[in-house]
Length: 309
DNA sequence: GGCCAGGTTCGCT
DNA sequence: AGCGAACATGGC
Image 1 (cartoon, rainbow, N blue to C red):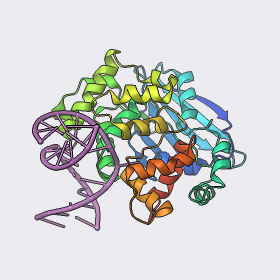
Image 2 (cartoon, rainbow, N blue to C red; image 1 turned 180 degrees about the horizontal axis):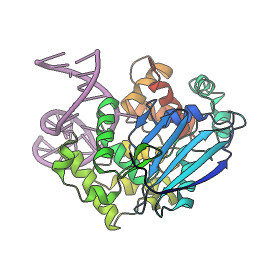
Image 3 (spheres, rainbow, N blue to C red; image 1 turned 90 degrees about the vertical axis):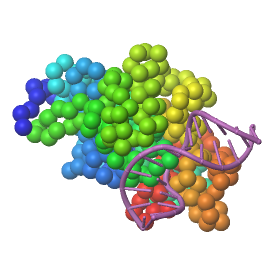
Image 4 (tube, chains in turn brown, purple, yellow; image 1 turned 30 degrees about the horizontal axis):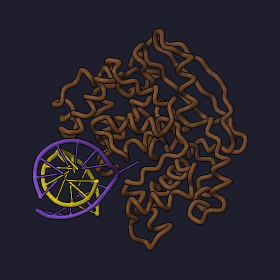
């Protein structure tokens, strides 16, 4: 393979301790070497970022410890990529600024959470590179098993994402709204989306690409307002919106009480063993407010473990 | 082979 | 407002 022309910029950064690099990177990739546009292998977390100019490859490795964390972040730019922007996004991908302290203080006294914060100490909340990425991934995940969702996400990235070869390895970025906006329903059906999901994703991509919908702006508004805007989109309900608060918008108190896996986990950990209803899960979760984004993340860390909840 | 997965919308009462 | 059906695919 022939590498594209490139320049490299390396910076060090210190996440807020405690920070477990392996746990956090593994959570971002669902324990896989590759998950959609994210790669985590040989102790390096990497992701090709595409903002419409030339893509930039971010590579992050740990050069510290859980209690004295330090990261080395390299940005490899092909052509005229925006290196400063890539460095800025890189830290957010693994939630380096995420301060676990207040959550841990609350969770220590909680019968459900206290074992989880010990088991997953140093897990930060990963963030998608763009709100669009989080939104599309969430829509693809609706109703189906995580196995099927993975097939859909990988298929979408492979079909519509920009690819660059760097140091002999091919990386693919999450597709830009423009790329999906230009697609048709049939091409998304070909990668196994239902006609309905295909329609929703194309509609949202077109709104984002045209500028009618400014998803990034949702990072700067209150959670209730962001939820209202998201739910107004066809294909987005309460479950999807709450996951976006957690995974894309950086809100502290998101809670997807409609989530079946979460309801099952809470039934086992805090109930009679049977799955909680959505209303029961929501009611129980109030004691974790305003740290429910963290609570959700730690519950899912347990859920996703082999043989987990 | 049928049923269920990390839901949502649409069309009926 | 509330309820049921349809949706697509992979695993058990």
